[in-house]
Length: 496
Image (cartoon, rainbow, N blue to C red; front, side, top):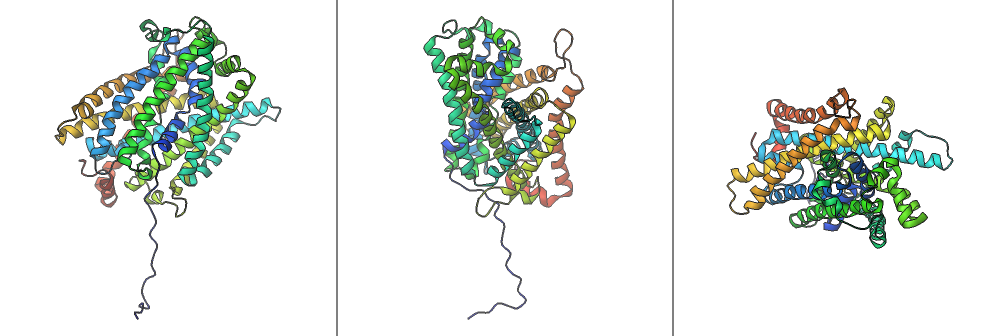
């Protein structure tokens, strides 16, 4: 028999830091498509694209955005199979352009998902406030409802991700069914002026302000790229993650193109713009009532709220896993890597994200920002600009990586597609930045964009966050070598 020395130190349990799971293609697609919030896009983004963008030619913008993002996805999928430890965007950027640039990309991603989550929190609070007040209840500030939603999302984000996937699946199914029901009803009735391909004619696609149309269309896709975040929890990730990404991009592009075309047909090409201008906020609900009757009207009202809830829940999960990935790479406190022993969720990261969301909502409330005209509009613009810039950088990283490693074959996936995607993303970024002042109301007497203080501050947040990340990498390399070495674990030998 052996004995334990009296002075032996007690065993200290090691905190679990690795996420695990068996998410399939379907579950991951549900998580990321729910982030796109289909009914919110069709109910809010599409009318805005028609009104402020390129009019009845707006449906074509979803197809254009889908092509650009599909080209980007081809390079991204090739990169995911090539790097030693694929995962979050910053790992791909780091392998191609160096660890410091990779860290800058990580902070850009943090800005993107935080901004898009905040903008939807503002919108859902406003919708709930108006809805309950319309039911005869006392008027309550929007931020009270929003904080309640933040708490519910926090609870679901704390538990195992399978539960979140199931909740999102149910909500997403309801959204898709009601929108497709409208599409079928419009096609069956022939619409207001007959069915046609008018929205896809060049003179309509390039009419008005196509830059704003493209911006709104790309915003509808935000979240598809987050499939890589679920890699550690995916079943057979080398197959599941790329497949889920392709399904998400193609599925979203087809769904939004078809749905927005049906909306234009429902209103009639000659009346679409005037119809939206008359009642932008409720035009889709009214259209549902016209084609699907009172039941469709009521269901759409309810599903608009659940759609936004699904969106914030999905982005909460994305943010918690991005923070987990950054912490695992030494960029955030190590405590954010802790995984719950029974729920198998990054619970510390989830708690931090819940607190962060509550604080940001509180700041918006104290500043007296309008939840729709300011919180939703401003921060949706910030998130769109940040994600486009980040994807453009990633495209460059893909090409540089494969050129430097002298990878033979697969020229289309490793060179041509990423370059074409990069060009499309650069054009998109320029369009977003050029028309950004329109989102915040910085326009002159003739309606032309002018860069006021609000526009400059919001647009400036993108390079500021990138510089924060780059500066952190340089600081860690010079003064905190032990933490910088942890970045090496995620971005292995990517250069400095």
